[in-house]
Structures are given as structure tokens and as C-alpha cells.
Image (cartoon, rainbow, N blue to C red; front, side):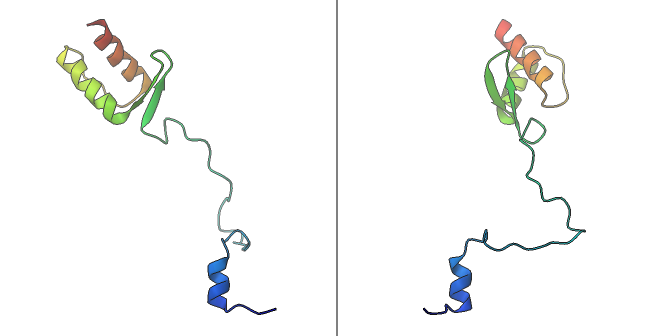
Length: 90
């Protein structure tokens, strides 16, 4: 049986074998919540059955404005569905 040098030992472990106590002021160590529209730049529209990125929304929004739509603020589901409704009706 041989003892590895510390550098070889350190390179051979994945990090899951070592546990460290962080102390009371470290903060919660829980897993993050599932991503939703507040965490990502995509919105799923059940009404239209598609996922839209913020870039796609901007392109659709520009078309919406060219068709005479009123300016809106924000990348939200109600805004997206209003834009898509107007574009699909023309």
C-alpha cells in the first residue's frame, strides 16, 4: 500500500467526498427553486402553445408596433399574448 502525494490525492477526488462545516453565518445551503419566468428570459404561452424568448418577443413587438399597436412596458405573458393576437389577426 502506497500513500499518494497530497497534490495527487487532491486531483483524484471530485469534491463530494469532503464535507465542510460553514458555521452559523454562512446562510442557507438548500437547493435553488425551479426556474420560472422571473429567472429566465423565456415565457410559455399556453394559449399559443409555444415558448418565446425575449429576443423573439422584441421582434414580434416591433411588428406589433408597425401594425399600429400601442406601446407596452415589459416582457410579460399578457403583453406577449396581446402582441401575438394582433399579429395573428392581421
